[in-house]
Image (cartoon, rainbow, N blue to C red; front, side, top):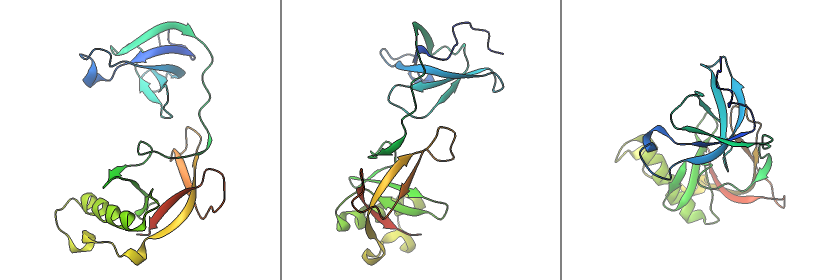
Length: 181
């Protein structure tokens, strides 16, 4: 059971990760979006500019309750243009991630040659080896370009976003290169 009376949805907070507790100015602002008494008495916190929710004990030392209480901000929904933060990372300067259970890969770039090279490096890194002929190079013909749209999903969805293609001419469409597994 949550016993801190300050732990209410809509309260503004500052959150500091455990590894940053000794760093000045490491606290990030956010809002309590809900209470979860069944998960070890947690408060749900969404940091400003983020979509993911943190579950934090209400007495966590890196949680500072502020005086401001307002409405819980709506979770951003709809189409968006992804950044490297929404994907797995950047390889050879190209944002990349795997999608689906089979390990399909998408790369956000207009440049086919750059996509092929970045996906090759990504797959080699994900294989965890310096040299593996199966992951050494991706056949350029296997990588196909599409216009795609990315859409945020509700907070409790299995994935934070989905991607759909082809999306030629649609609002917020971005160029991707796709490699099926």
